Length: 319
Image 1 (tube, rainbow, N blue to C red):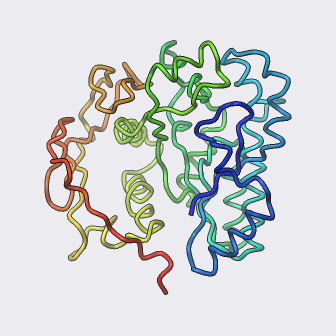
Image 2: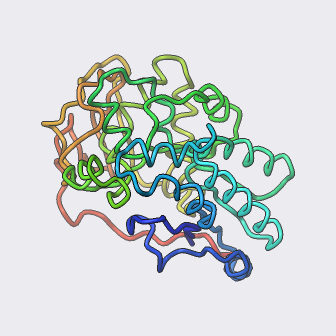
């Protein structure tokens, strides 16, 4: 069960107003109902009224700087996401439900709140949106893509986030995949409030994060834990997925940790048509992807057949 606690001041996507659970009483009732069937609840924390109040002084300005300034109000980056996530943690404690906090890193203090919850013995897990772990980008084009996607080109608390990765605060890590077409994202140059945010990053995620492993930011073992084993456990798919065991599906990504590759716009596979990391030199490259014993990706070439995917029911909620 995923809940958005957000109504964007102007943009309709990805925060569709009809999907928002902005009333805390309603959120509590949903959490209680979820707890009764022993399911976890995933929350995108926000405080819509505060989001509107902080955005109001900037709504007359359609430049990307206006949205940046509203998100960085009084030098507190995404304060609404911090505050909303802490509200969700406390409501989950009240409702006695398992909570998974989404998008750690996007709020300045979210990882600290999740660490506090774990120290209290609460059944809280957290996902780190790992764009914040990539080093400062000096290329002006890459910086602009990050800004248009509502990211800061550099993160002044990335050392804290790496500590959270390595000390067990982070349970899974990913790079956001918001597959908007490049024309939709570019529209933010002229009307930032009505342009969709986010970036397409699923194609480049492994090589970007393995580059950080090669730089000594974390270990290959922890990277595997946070991108494979733990997500499978959280989704109720373990040990069929996320494990190398007899009886588990033969799913593997084979990587060459010494190989280097320049990420290129011309090699984008997704329909979004662009990558914000064009020209980035990555070290640590996935060379094969194997799903249920069959090769589906061979050196950046998709060789799997359409329709090969299969539905796997979750074990969450059972027992």
